[in-house]
Structures are given as C-alpha cells and as structure tokens.
Length: 467
Image 1: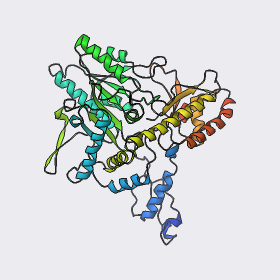
Image 2: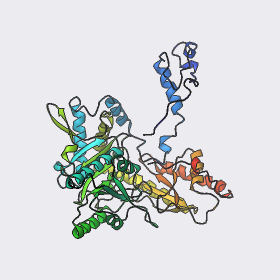
Image 3: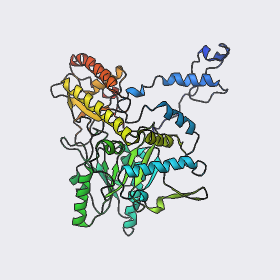
Image 4: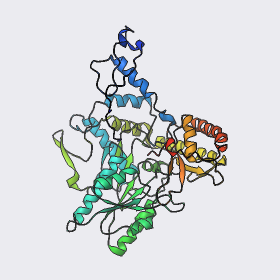
C-alpha cells in the first residue's frame, strides 16, 4: 500500500456541507463544517457523513473505464449482496466461522483440480489478500526449503532468486524484505520476458528457485514455463542442482485452464512446486483475494505453518495477514459455483475476443505498432509507428484520460528502456460496445495529436504504469 503523511497544517481545511444534507432542519445541517485531517469534535448524522464521503469519491476515475488495472471492476448484484453479508466475518477465526473456512478449503481443492495436480488431496493451499501476499508466501517457502537443504552453508551463503526483469514489483519487495539476491533476466530485442536458457545460466548452488510468469503485466504474454522446466532439468543432469519453479499465474492461471488447455505450465510439470493466482483479477472477484498452492507438503516446509485450534481440532494456516474479511472468499466460491468451467470459458473467451478485436482495430489506424495482440492474456501493448514523430505514447495516454479512459503509458525495463508503450487490459465488463467507444475516442484524438510539432515531453502528466 502507498505510504501517506499526516497533514502539516491541521484543521485549516474544512469540508463544506450542503444544508439539504440535514435530515429535517436544513439550517441545523450547516452548524458544523468538519475538518478533513483531524477527527471532528461532534458526530454527524449517518446520511450526512455518507454524502460527504460519497461526493468526494465521485472525483475518482470510473473503474469500468480503467484499462490500466487487471483487477475486477464488475460483479453480479448477487455477489455484492453476498459479500456485504460476509464483511463482518474474520477469515482467521476458523472456529467461529467454520463454513467460511470450508468454502476456502473447497476453493483450494477446485484450483488444485484446475491446475492438474497429480494428487489433489496432497496439495496444500490457502487464500491471501492478493497475489502479492501469495508471492511472498511462495518465496518464503522456496527460501526455507533451500536453507534446510543448505544448513551447513547458510547463513554464510547468500540465497538468490532468478526471474525475468518483467516480474511484478512484489518479487522485488520479497527479495528486499527477505534478504534474497534478485537475479534478473533482462529483455532483449522483441523478447519482453524471461528466456529459459538465460534463466538456467543464472542458477547456482545458492538459487532458491526460478519464477515463471504466466502472463506478463508489461505486455500480456505468457512465459514458456515448460521450456524453463526443461532447461532446469538439463541443468540438474549436468550439475546435480535441483531448482524448483514457482509459477506466478496472477492472471494467466485463471485464463489458460479455460482457453489454452493444451498449454502445459502447471502441476503437470514435476518441477513446478507452487502456483499463485489473483482471485480478484481473472478469477472475477472484487479486490481482496489471492490464492497460493503448493504441490505437496514437501514444497511447503512444516515450520512455516502456524496451527490454530479449529473446532477442537488442528487447523494449519500460512499467512502474512491475519484479520481480513471472509467476503472475498465467499465471492470466489460463489463465482466458481455460478459459472463452472463452461461459464468461465465463455467469460474468458469473450474477454479475449474483445482484446484481439480492439488490438486489430488499433493497428488498422496506421499510427500504432502492436507488440502483442491480446491472444494470450486479454491484454495487449502497442507503441507509435516508426513514422509517427509528432506525438508519443504519453501524449496519447493524456488525451485518452481527458475522455475518461485510463490507459497507462510507460517505458520498458532493461535492456529495452528505449521502448515506451501503451497497454490495454480487457476485463469482464469491458464489452465490444465499450471497445468501440474507446476506439472512437482514440480516433477523435488523432488529428490533434498529428498536428503537434513534436511530443510534449510531459511524461509525468500521463497515466502511469499500474499492475
């Protein structure tokens, strides 16, 4: 989460309250303008407090028009009702809310089956607040597994984690927080994610694991997990090093099982020790839920597991966060139950169809060059064509924001800092109709952009990169 500072000048600014917010007496409703950065001395009527906060939040962007975020922005009304009914249930209190705990257990079993675990009953898994926490847990398990195998050398030896430079920022945080050396495979040419052979070459006796990303946030492409495992198999044959793989499937792990069934990336590969996904991305649940699964108990060292009394029995838990609402877990089970495999397949296919359709239409405008086409994740990245010199992607992002669309413009990491792109994330709820409206606004912006003498250079004014 972002870090914020308290106001330096407390109490100077006050909230303006409309007289009509008062329940019965408009004048009485004006008696106090509450401060913004300290607690007011007296209470407000609930309707007044609601309206004040509601009005300020209207200045946020429209979430449905946010093409920067992967996070779900639409669910059925029934799901919202169910979540409201579960907001007061604390997920960590397994003995107090046994049915919520049971729904979590069922979700883990569903994902183990979906990800082709050889023995679903052996899989160990849990819900999290999102993929970032899930990645932290997976990284902790990799490190602890390595330290146990290298007890004679650790803590003298420094563990490392191999991954592509395109990984989500949570992996950088993991390495920083848990004192692990990040070994990054840089981009090269038109390869915008990890190269399996280069990853294997970075591994040594201190490597705790390699991260493969099923759906890069930079361009929506899948990393070749099967090829990565094959390179690590060959490495083990040559050197004896047995390096596990974690698949960060934040988005793709809820796309590939339905649309790319022949793609082998999951527990069918013996080297894949763990997988995470975001329930609140293409799992189709509102923000606040992720999932982490381990192939078996060997992949998740027992000493990391915390045990709680659960209905007089023993409930193993593994989490960085404790208290959190059960609403998102209930909503995840609702969505699994509601859609089933065929429903998920239909939703994800529709989303991918919108992405490939929109990518093709943007390419046809002639001003842009596609890097990806939305045919893996329903996500595509594009940049200005070589002949376009009057404007850049940051100018485009800013113009689209004026029409209400949030489209991130950003520069790629090493060794492709020369490449700046726009990225469009298509989610359930972003329909063909909305795609056509977006295309119309982009088309309307082009004449003005083409009339510029040169790019404005105002990168900071454009929508930034969002995971």
